[in-house]
Length: 274
Image (tube, rainbow, N blue to C red):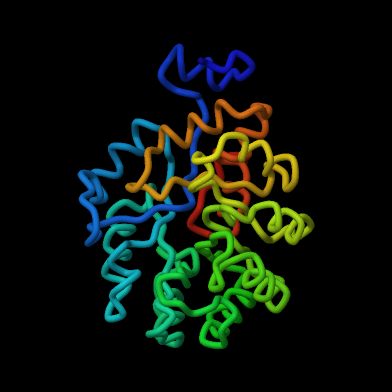
């Protein structure tokens, strides 16, 4: 059923376009050993992005999340080739950390890297471990952005682990991938007033009513659109937001306005809302 309360939904149904840009803050790229992706190359992903009116995808390559030898080869060439469409998170491999090298690369390519991506469940190392301190100190000092894979009940990147880091490094901008799925009520309580903690929507489409609850407890001004592309359908994510019982202004915040404000801190970014 098309949402007759939403002009954006009506536009999409009638014209094939919402008339609203999208900024996707959670993507990946390249092959992955456990699954076949038919469109995981930059060019394949751009086709999906173009169809869905995604202006830019912020991503971390699958390969960079496993390979400790050379993170930049998975990101720099792609962003340099498509500077208007992609930006990257430098991966943090928690058992193979080399913070000096990683920070040097982020500094060397300021027009490529937003900041860092943490996926602590992969390495069974808590986010609050001292091995991550150099990264968070750098982020805290520079006001760059990080994306953290979060999941309810995880001893490595659950609510309590994120809280420890947020309290220690209060000037970092934290994007919480998957919105603490499975423990979101605890997260709402803990981070209700944490203006630098943002909830990202990958996994949210799995649960009806989740979008409305984040808007109610946190506010759409702290919500970011994300898909885990190429894992999940961009259109599924769009449909989840369009079918939610929220306002079109909330939808615009989720699709691009919140992200537009975050990215405006970078000199390379041209704001959508000037």
